[in-house]
Every structure is written in structure tokens, then in C-alpha cells.
Image (cartoon, rainbow, N blue to C red):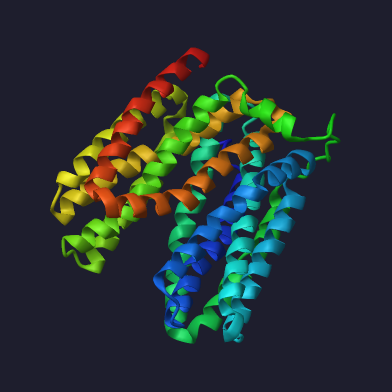
Length: 389
């Protein structure tokens, strides 16, 4: 298949190595803080930093990718992620400043991984050469990288912590991004582009108000928030209902498997799919599942709901990325991807805090219903995209 070429495989491998380091440290860092006697709210702050820091650096990352292509951003991404891992290693020696080092490690790993992701997505779009079906296939394959990484990183971190302690786990995780430098040799180099004008706030605003862009970012935000809600609330509901840790883990695992599964299937159906149709259908299915979830009281039925939700949310990323590339000029794809990245990371950083506050006030079930209603109403925006398809 032309869309699954050697450069695309190199992009996937490179992103898996970067993202696995970050996701592993995202598990190991908070565990180290808890074992050192830090309160639970500290864990929330650490987790938030992994997503909050990239919000501030996304536009720089997008412009860097637009100007220099893949290789310079990839090297910078590896450098930042390895530096973050190095600080995590140092935190096992210096207990007095351990929390500060872990916070800085979270920021650097988050920024580095996001920088690599933006460069990857922009370069992957170039491989499709503007063909709509090929774009969908490419972004479906590329979307497997985070799904695989979210398995490799945490499993590797947990196993190594038990075998060799936190220091050994951090050292092994820090070595992973170096493989990105090796895989990047298979990605074609681009000639640096001299920008026609100095980028600034006005240029970014012009991109944001591109016809169709606010609608697409709104849809992306709703679906990203639904993902965050599911990840946050399922453990809470499972604990309240007395499910075992393995049952809760299995529910979340089924969700992740469904996300990966739909991204494997989409490339073989891409020539029949249209973004607005898939997004509207995914939003309707997401709204239905979120509304049903609170009424389900057995673990296996929750697993079925998780599978349905995973299919819906897993289909969103390839379609959003395909639409994004058609809405924006090719020389600004990096900036457009950065705008999307900002909405996703803002959701991941802020929504869990909001969910926690509202959940304590109104209950988990109400959160599901409110989010389901918002997504259901928002599905109308996806239908309106059909006018531009």
C-alpha cells in the first residue's frame, strides 16, 4: 500500500519511542512522588504539567515544522524529552528538590513529545500528496503510535520499577527517544522555507478564523473532552461499585483496543469515507454511549460501552487531520496542527480538574449526561461540514 511506506513506518517508530518515554515517566513520576509521601493533589499537578506545557509551545513547534520540515524539530524533540528523562533520573538522588525536578521533567517531556508529534503529523500529510483518501489512511496508521505507546510506556515503567527501582526505570525510558534519531534517517529531508512575513499574533488569528476551522476545532475539543471524561470517571465509578482493579483496567484496556482497532480498519475503507459523515456518526454514537453509561452496573456491560466509545473516538483523529489539511494552505499545515494540539492539550490539562470539581458537586452520572448532551448538540456542527466537503 503506497500510504504505508518506509518513511511512514519511520515516523510511526519515531513517535512510539518519544511517546513511550513520556507515557512511562507520566506513570513513574507520580508513583515516586506518592511513595515519597507527597499528597494526592501533587499527582494531579504533575499529570497536568505534561499537557499544560505543550499548550504554550505548540505554535512555535508548528512554525518550526513549517519552516524546517521534520528533522530539526525531531532532533529538538529528542533533546527535550531526553533532558526531561535526565531530570527524572536526578530526582531519585536529590530528595530535597525531587518535586521540582519531577515537575520540570513533566514539562520537558510533554513539550518534546508534542513537538515531535506536530512534526510527524505535518510530514505524514506530505506523504499523502494532497489525496483525501490517502490522507485518511496515513493519519489512521500514524494514530496507532500513541495507542501503542500508551501500552509500552506504562507497562515498561511498572515492570522496571519492580525489577530495578525508579532510577532504573527512568534510565531505560530516557534511552527510548534516541531510537527516534535512528529512524529519522528514513524520512526524506525538506529544503528549509523562508517565511514570506514574520509570523505573529495576527497571522495566528487569521488561521484560526479560516472558514471551517473554528467548527473543526470545536468538534475536536468536544471529542477530546469526552475521551478525558471517560479516562477520569471510569475508575471513579468502578471504585464506587466495588469493581476490582483488574476489572477497571480491563474496561480501560477494551477502550484502548477499540481505538487501535478502528484505526487499523479505516485505511481499508478510506476511499468510501467522508470526514463530515464519520465525525457526525462518531459524535452521535459518543453522545448515546455517554448517556447510557451511568445506567450500566455490570463490568462486562461497561466494557461493551467502552468498546463502542473507543470505536467512536478512535475514528475522530484521522478525520479531523484530513479535514485540517484541506482547510489550510500547505505552507501553514504545521501551524494548523499546532492549533489543534493546543485544544487537545488544554482539554487534557483543564478538563480533569473541572470534572473533579463538578463530579464532587453533582455526581459522576450527571457529568456523563451533560457531556453526552453537549456532544449530541455539537454533532450538528459536523453535519454542517458537509457543505465544504
